[in-house]
Length: 100
Length: 213
Image (cartoon, rainbow over all chains, first blue to last red; front, side, top):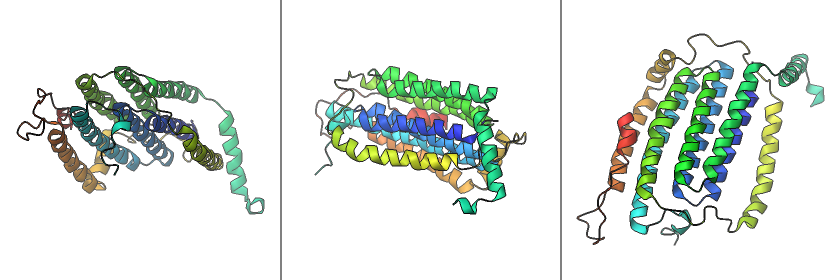
């Protein structure tokens, strides 16, 4: 039997890696990928608690999270493509259109 | 706090420490898979080439699918491979092909000292607090294996179509909106007149996830 803490620590490590990617990287595509990594870490936590409580509701919830992640990836990538058309760049530091 | 310790709590602590020290084969395998997942995750955020980052992320998702299978979430493990490693990452690859732009400076360290001064104590506090709660709870709530129906398509489907029916329908509407929004945002505006030298139309990335759901 594996302690639930192992899964939680793994999820925390993956979430930390995703957070670092969001904060440090400048490529909008990599930032979106890091967000996917964070969503997966949260999903792993849900599934680990579902196993600990013998409760399948966590699986349904994780499934809905996956669907929302798919929608987010579609819209996010479309916005990246649109920005690239207008500004010829996907660097998030250069996107200051809404700053003022 | 020590005055409030009751016999069951002490027992739970003893069970907890014994479970922490033992390393059955499943736990070793979990940490091998977990090490690979973290390794490929770090590769994802350090690659300069976006294609390499996408491939590393696919490897991370496969490792996570294996972890789900170890948690008896068989349906979610299959969906993880199909939806994440399949549909979503293909979408990412499409966009990488469309953009096809080399990066000049991958990582920005501007203002990292100020952010570090704020962030490091916050992260330190968070890790301490989380670690405290992690190691002072019972290790395993149900040590025995779950029933055979746990995590199967049948059980998850029953829950999705009864308890979470509204959420399920809401997500389906959300996906429809996402498909339409992606087409509207990503298409070329030929009749708008704002960009006289318009580029040739590129394939819309919206058809990827929309077709899979």
